Amino acid sequence: MSKNYANEHPKNKKKNKSSNVKVASSKAAQKRKLKLQKLFQEAVEMRESDYGGYVGMDEQEAIYKKLRLKILGRSD
Image (cartoon, rainbow, N blue to C red; front, side):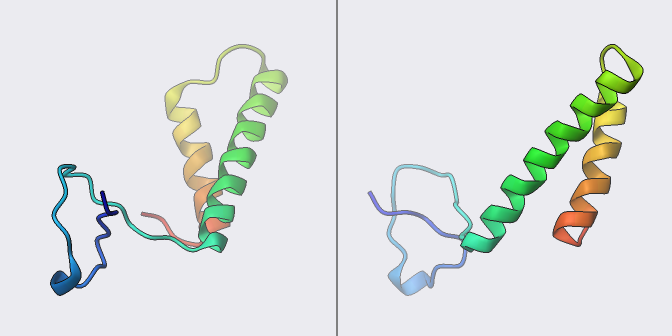
């Protein structure tokens, strides 16, 4: 079974049973995403330790958006 990439030329595109489409990303982009996840986890844990208790989903989303803009440089 071949991978089904979104940016693949239609002439060379092979049909497969899976309807999932994978999008290729560079090693640098993968590293940035891992860094973003790591920083997000650290920020949430820091927030929990500072203020005690659970961090709500709204606060987590705000933290994630801020970090995503800082690390990836865009807001999708």
